[in-house]
Image (cartoon, rainbow, N blue to C red; front, side, top):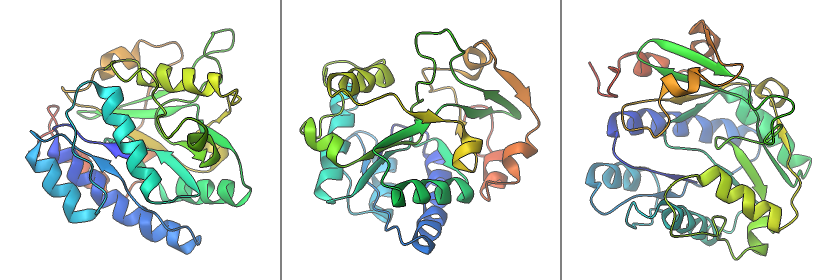
Amino acid sequence: MTAFWRRPHISRIWWASIERLTATFATEDVELSVVAVCSPDDEENVELARAHTSHVPIVPNTPLAAKMNAASLGAKACDPDYVMLVDSDDLLSDDLARGYAALMREQVLHIGLRDLYFYEGGTLVYWPGYPKGHTSHKRSIGCGRLYARSIPDRCGWKLWQHSTRSRGMDALIDQTMAQLEVPRLSAPMETVGGVAVDIKSADNIWSLAKIAELPGAEERPIQEVADHIPEWTMVEALTPTGVRS
C-alpha cells in the first residue's frame, strides 16, 4: 500500500515499476494488489491510480496519519496474507521482490529494510541505517516494511495510532508495533536480495542534502541501482524538481 501527493511525473515511474513487480511476484505465486490512497485535490494522481488499481481511497492529505490509516483499511478490504508499505517514490528491484516472496513463504511475521539508496538530480546517496549504539539501531525504515496480516488485525488495521499527526510516520508505526510487542526486525537490502531507491524531489520532507548528512551516508556510483531498476532511464529524465526534462 502507498500514498500519493503531487509529483505525478514520479508517480508515473512508480506505476511502471509496479507493473513490472506485479509480473515478478506472479512468477513467485504471489498476487499483488495495490492500495493507493490519494487526496481529492490531487486530481492527476487520482486519475493515474484509478488507471492501475480499483483500490483508491480518497481522503485529505492532512493529517497524514489519518491518510495512511485509510490506506491500511483499504488494504484490509483486499483480504491479504501480508501487507507491504512502499512509498510512492520508492522503486524496488525484481530481485528484492523475489526476496520478499521467499520471506512470505517462510511465514515471517514482520521485517523491513535497514538501509536504502536515495537519488535526486544525478546524485545517488547510500545510507546504511542507524548505527550501532543509536536508540534506533536495527530499526526498519519506511520503504519495504512487510507485516503478516495478524499484526494489523490486532490494531484494527490502524497502524498509525495518533491520527492527528502529519510528521514522524515511521516513529508512529514503531509505537504501534511496540504496543503490540512486535519485535524490531530488519535486514540490509543485500540480505533480502536486491536494491531499493527513494527518488527525492523538492516536495520531500527529508531532502537529499539532509540524508547525506546522516551518519554513514555516502555518495555512490549510480550504476549500483541503475543496473537493477529497469525504469532508470525514466528517472534520469527527471529534473531536480521531479519534472521531465
